[in-house]
Amino acid sequence: MSDNPLGDHLRARRELVQPADVGIRVTGVRRTPGLRREEVATLAGVSADYYLRLEQGRDRNPSPQVLEALARVLGLDTTATAYLLGLAGIRPTVPARRSRPHRQVVPAGTRQLLDVIGLPAFVENRAFDILAANSLATELAPGLRAGENRLRTMFLDHDEVERYPEWPQQRAGMVAAFRTSIGADVDDPDVVQLVGELSLGSEEFRRLWARHDVRPLGGGAVRMWHPEVGDLELRREKLAVGGTDGQLLVVHHAEPGSPSARGLALLGSLAATRTAAAHSATEQSDVPASGT
Image (tube, rainbow, N blue to C red; front, side):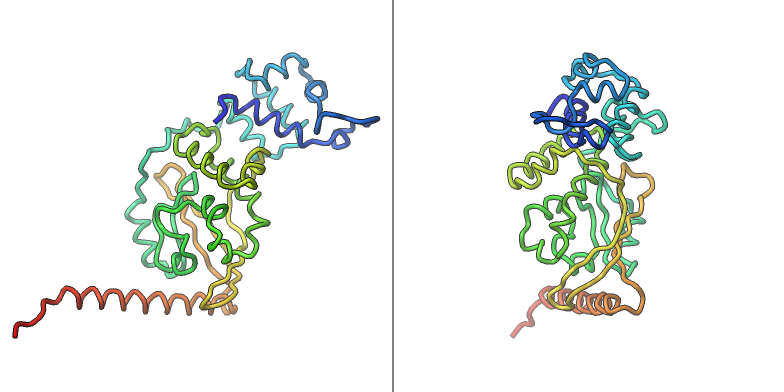
């Protein structure tokens, strides 16, 4: 993992901005992708030497005003600007966050909610590790179970990908949301290990990670396919779990009365039948054999 995340981010975003986007007329052949350092500096109102020091990591204490000016030049939205400020350790309105504990515990009340909610649901942390999941979630997709990581599943589990027809188009957004979620904690050992594993296993992940995109976290529509109930058009809601370091309760639901809602109901019946059968088998195995 780089020891210059701010400089890496500035360079990656600079290379994605086209001169025409900021009103620069291009004549002849440009060897530099995107904007030149001098162009960014001029548009942001800072010296070229100072901007060079920022990219090279020789100045790691820029002011919020400088970073906000750079964000405007680079076309960053509110989320991306906040991320840029976070890389420089500037969080004026957010309390300092403790390092993510190695083992995170899902509150008992949230675990109970998973059992009674009646919809596929799971709890994930800031690194998209699944900390707890109900049987309906695992029935919906085997990768939605405790111990899995959703980013790893998306890029490395080819069997799971078949259940998500739109995943190839959603991967870029997933990586950008991951960057937003971890913020400046790119040196967290667990994050370093995950990014290294994905970088080795997926060329597409390496390419998307190098873009340094960020996007707001949130739910949205998701299309899924299940071998027993067919196609499902679902909504995925993400709700913050209070008293935790960024845990989210993720719930899948469908429009009432829709074919997808009927599919989820059938899935629930199948899950209940399998659970009952498993409990029955366990009870029978615990009964001692009668003597002769």
